[in-house]
Length: 198
Image (cartoon, rainbow, N blue to C red; front, side):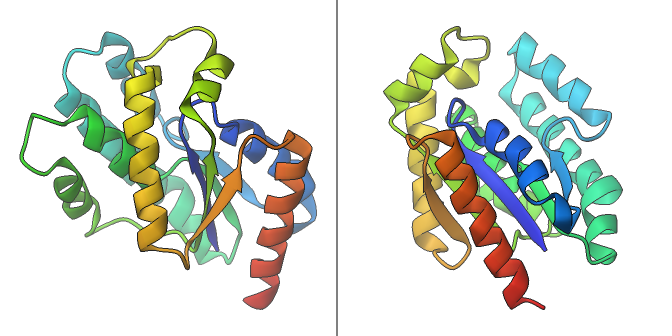
């Protein structure tokens, strides 16, 4: 089973994923992330830091996703393991559709068509939602261009549109709740879904 955790920067998803590793330890989940689970992630981070070319940056994200699938996700799923990923393909559709705006007619459509032949669609996606102002406050210092309020606002709107289109896959999470409450809710939902598949 492939579970992904999505949300704008500052939504607490990385904290949530770290907590899930402990809360679901008895299920022995494979906890992973994009970018960074493979060597390609270093190239992605360099592209983000340079912030020169959104197309190069995007294609490196796609390459990272492909490597992640090859080296982590597909092997784990083939063994019947529970995989929990901090960010996945929906991050690409939400973020890069914004950063590529103006470089091509339909960035999101292009991104989805590039991923379609090789990606694995998640079984369950938790979307951490909170006001953009709260996310910016949590981030404190802007280190990446993705963290600007205007970008985060557009990205979150994309995410919410995805969730509306696929309500059977997406579970909305109130990221303004205490982190313990968020962790308890998500962990319980994963257990319920895993149990229903057995």
